[in-house]
Length: 349
Image 1: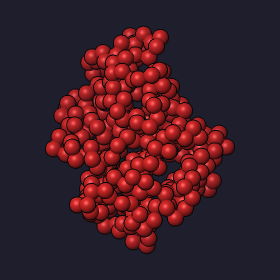
Image 2: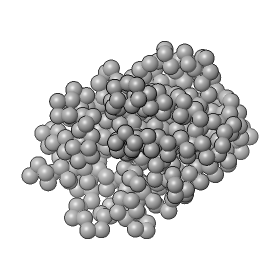
Image 3: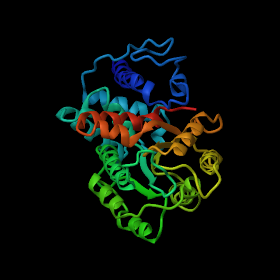
């Protein structure tokens, strides 16, 4: 009985996301993610995968015992038990806090259609790699770089709040900057563990913005090397948690080859496989702020490139544009950010 309930609870959450993914899956990919999930052609809301006996959007009454079983089964099925064994204090905290959230019911993400996804997201170490540059050009004459900075601070603050909601108090997210001068290097030490939206906002407010858009070069130096390569080569030899690296930028590559980001991601996947590690334990996502046409075109090329599109999830549209539309709707924002973050988690090559 527990197994049947487990399938229903997680299947209802994933099926409820599919309608949204028709919009969120990058508009350039012809519904690639939908096809990877077993769909051909257009993704239709509430439609189960061909041959599936699961009924979409079944209502699920929350039961803490069943939920615990669901999460444990998910961890084992996905091979995440190497990170989270049955006695993992981290996993125990996540499950307990998810249970408390469900019982209180005071959050838009407390319902059965979102809570399994929120729990999955909490298993990842989130790294926000962000920056605004001198090279991006806004088409709207009234829009200033300061507005993009404000939007990015608000957006990353919200993302931090969601991704830290269920994890232990001593854990948090990481923020790294596209243009990291001495000031930003000092901020990395000052904000070594970002556990709240306020921490994220303070760090982002204190940083400087500008410079060129060396996405691949700086990603490799500031994120991949310290958080993955150094750990595998000179540290414990194993990653502490799976990683979700979210790139947020307003420009396209400048100051490096246009394929440098491509090469950095492929290099990361190759190194993981060389160590016998499932390449899916590191996920990549890239999103745009601002309406720079060159940045938009670059994201389109990433989404369509057969050599990279399965390894990086390209968010459709502009984060700041949708954020401004939903700004007064807290529940709507929570649900939208949840589904944005779930995009790369659900993506499979």
